[in-house]
Length: 336
Image 1 (cartoon, one colour):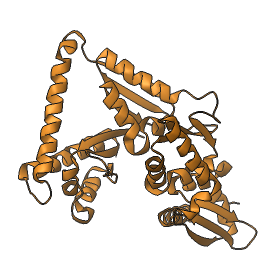
Image 2 (cartoon, rainbow, N blue to C red):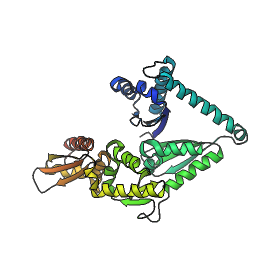
Image 3 (cartoon, helix red, strand yellow):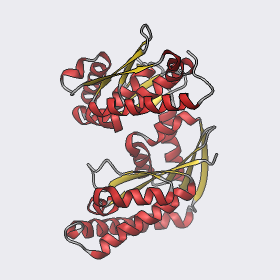
Image 4 (cartoon, rainbow, N blue to C red):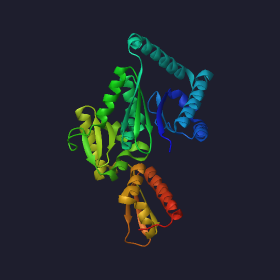
């Protein structure tokens, strides 16, 4: 299996409509032509961060097509989609780039670019990238280095390019992220059950985004082989509020504030083993990815699967469960 590359493009908010296209037609076409996964759902900030993932070839192809569409939008000057805002954003970006090059020209002359790599376990990928690419974008911005993440079945390789000082800063930031806390129950960390990760993140990251906006703190999920930690950052008052909100989610006390949905499915007893997976891995993954809470009642025939959470989370959980059952039906047999 080829290693997976993850890259983030920053585009002016005013060109995103052209990149996505009417009813998502343009971005869908780029996905189909390149095979890359493209996520441009978070458009709350300007510039918008577009997350690309897939093989190196797929990401490079998708990047070229997206930039071609974005450049076309800027050149066209269509006031309905681009207008003065896009031109101003492009000019500001260009000016910033020129200013940055001018400011660092003297040091670059004596400090040639270097390339270094850092090998990390596969589970570190999410921590380095962060929610919707926020963590890696912050590392790039603060260090000045180009930072790319290549994912493979066996691990995660981080590539740094820049001056030696830039690379050192970027590596130090990643090492700080990877350093496990000595006390997970106090300070800026909170240990949580692996099955609760999905509830905190929510469908498409909506829950964790809301918790960050309400608290003013930065919240990241640190998945480790033996435990999961919630990492908080910000001013003490904001961190304390964020921990309170996360605790409310874990205890279910947030349900009066967030709309809840529920659904049930019937499955044959022979399919429960496939749904649960070895050591609960399959059902935990569905909970993490969907954001829904899933309970399985094996005391009836057929067995009852209960899903609770936001409407989007429950809908996604239903799709994932059906996919697991389809795989089960095509396997040599489902064993409980």
